[in-house]
Length: 415
Image (cartoon, rainbow, N blue to C red; front, side):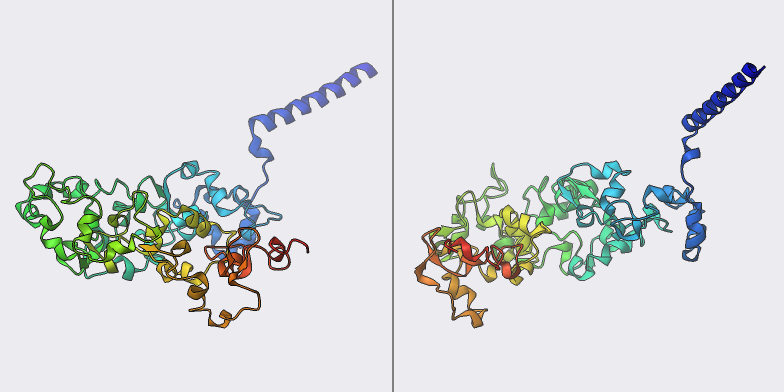
């Protein structure tokens, strides 16, 4: 009888164990902690009502607070488990795919600058209406440089032409810039008025936005503000429209530019010149029209960093936080001559002379500098840029090394 009782106890123990294993495997949610208590404390924030909305973020609607937040402690604000960008991409994996160009908030992992992580009355959890959201960062004055507005831009339909996260096309365009306009304006190419306006030159497959502002302009047909003088007489630079190669230029390379821009050719005969390695005037200037002065293709930062990728890397590297003020403003030509120079790094004069035009207090140095002082490492004269890296540094005053001791012992090795 005692043996039967013992067998009964063992059987009951085994049965309870099986029930525990079964409930754990079949219903893992039974072991998950409940986050409904979160709402009882955060009631004042209106969270309970928002969780009931079908438009709420799925984990929030299901009150799965632990999907994003650690209930005990965290290194991040609001007790989130990871940095915002990494946290969002852990579910939204498609946003983590590699693309050529990223929207800055996406690149910096700042998803909440556009999306509310809990609830929004706007589509896709946007913090504002789609048409207004873009203009919280992109100032209307810069987007609309005129009163005549392109239809989609006027209606704030930014996403008709741009992707909000990333794209393989520049400016986050939904299509290559030579094709995007044709998606709406294909019939216009056959319009006699359009043909006449382009002086019978073929424009199919052309870069429309090189002459037309895609957002706004004060000029008819959204033509950009500043016109190149021969713009209305195409044959000044191009072959006639009825020739075999109508868009070909009449002279090779920059020679066609130097015919009118007398004396500029001398800039490119200096020791350091930008005309080398395939560079041509149209790399930086639009030969037809532009909204920028000197017919520049865009702001200096965009133009210069297109080639100077090392500077672009420094500008985007968060660890390199000390930069020359003019560089921060994108005023590259404040220190460099864009065409050519007889001095290092395209400076318009010797480094010390260039630097002390602004830094007048440093015109007289306590440390020896100039032609008669020699850097033992390079055997070159010591100047401002011997110690300062103006394109960006991790150290204060744009110093190349920490000024406590490391900077000095680069030359004073005996110390």
